[in-house]
Image 1 (tube, rainbow, N blue to C red):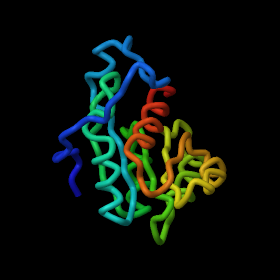
Image 2 (cartoon, rainbow, N blue to C red):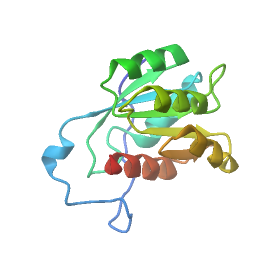
Image 3 (cartoon, one colour):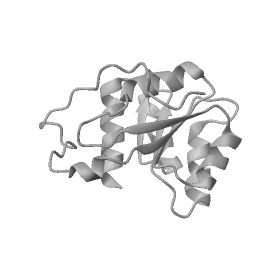
Length: 157
């Protein structure tokens, strides 16, 4: 589908009190967009993720260029091809859930990009650990929580 955050009019608020906020990041580090794969069989979930993060989730991060994916084989194909900086995978997708896909990617891709998984509930965080994802956020998607998780993962890479 679409690969941009068109329609995202506001960037999430950030403050120096946010522990992952780093105003010292050089502007040159923010000039190249990051390619973010967003996987869910549900188009509404993909749009919720894109709208929650917007085109630039925080001023100290580069813009995000989204690639929406609805099927597991395309996730594997895109990740194998390279050029993805972050994958956000919906653990509630069917028939292939994002947690299993995350585990497969981490097991099979030597330099696997960071992965954020969306879990069905906060108590499923242990499944995110099993999948070797760098972070997890539970449904329903909270824009602030997702932004914190994505920013933390991107700054740690």
